[in-house]
Length: 102
Image (cartoon, rainbow, N blue to C red; front, side, top):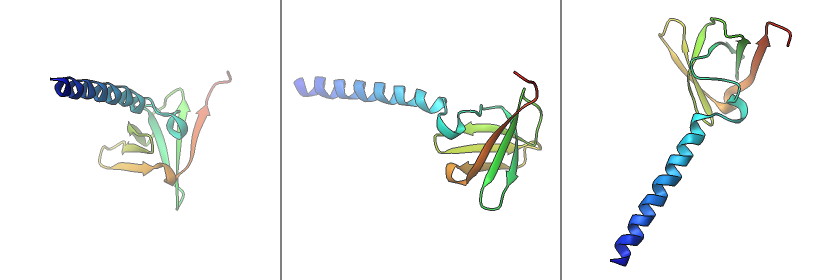
């Protein structure tokens, strides 16, 4: 009976740890912290890396952010034909352009 309780406790703790960890992946940190899912961005291939640019406020551009992971970002083109997964090591820069002085 004690082993059943021990396993039940282990399953509950494991579930809680996984649930709390899942919340961390929803909110990007680090390099991708400035990006948001649904945001419009432009993508420039620099040869060995990519530059991602976005405007503040959000303006229609060539790509839309559809997923952000801890070490990658996924962009879909405006025609909704291609999805590009960009690993963190292939990002040269993420540029925010402000159109109004703040």
